[in-house]
Length: 480
Image (cartoon, rainbow, N blue to C red; front, side):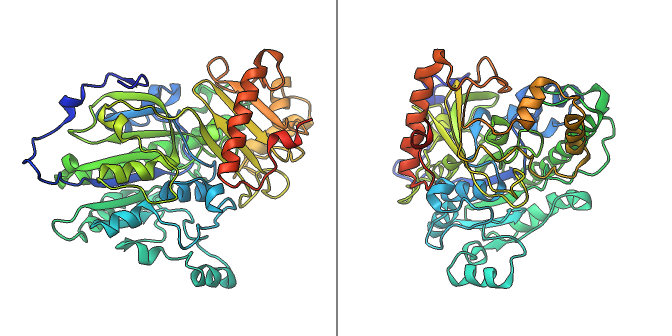
């Protein structure tokens, strides 16, 4: 039995209903739900103090109790567009040539949904898909170039396609109806795949946070404890609550149609949350996301796994669940055996990359290049442009970041927070012991007691960079 899995039954108990000898097993419906900018801690079932105490995610928690919670899931990039492209293509943004924000994959790159459709599935895409085939409003010459080269092609790849439906505000209450309307289009007897993307918890959050007192919130130690930071956090948590409400409406609609027993449902964050040291960074808050799976009769309720999962692994897993092989070019690894309680080696390393982002990641107008590798215990980051100072994505000009900048100028930040947010140059290399330092406060790179660990992780990262045809110089080429 997989050592990474806990509380799983024997494989025989998961076999489900007996099938007629020689009959082809029924293919499951597949529902993929992505939250937007939402890190792993902020679901109550992951034990986050504020979500648990305030009961902000009752629907997601109930969903997790009926399936499997993955505790070590990571996205391939800390930004929406490259992360989602890698999920559909089953390969890293670097390998796809899609590292620049909103740069689609080449027209000949196959998505897992293409394979499903070719093999008889009805496939749909609704909600917020975040630039899978370019930005929503591209300049005319860019949009034309994308179409000419087969990169803006989603309308032809899905039986049901909605370019953009935001789920914030009054639209939140329409989620169930939209989901039902999409399924009404599925021909009788056909298995289906549907993607539904939420806008939560992407900024802006709005000003309301009823029942969430900023003064009572527990802050992580890497955040400066300022009133503006607390207020911003309260508004984010209110968006988490809205996300949970919308997810509940979607699952209720699925269950009321009697489809729960035949549907593999996956909930995942597309990348890290838009808070300090989150989205746009390769710290774990930027790439470590929630991953919850429900599949009645296949996945035992109330189970969890701490095996390492990458976003690129969803594509081959969906195909394997449908009884299909992954196409050439997909480098993701199926974790279907883990879902079924079967022996599975799993990953030993997960990799992530960061490139140019629309809007500033640093003060250099969004241009920052970094790579990372994560193991069960350690996290290693290579900052190829360390002279670019830190700037939180989507936060410039917002009160929380403005207050931190003012405290820095006035000399009121602690030495820890001065180092985390305003050190320049940043470290070229960073190594963190996630077991003893989960908030990544102490950089162990160049620490003599961790020399072997650093060398091993650098080796694995460089091997991955070579396999993926990465354009950056290898760390060993720039380290002196």
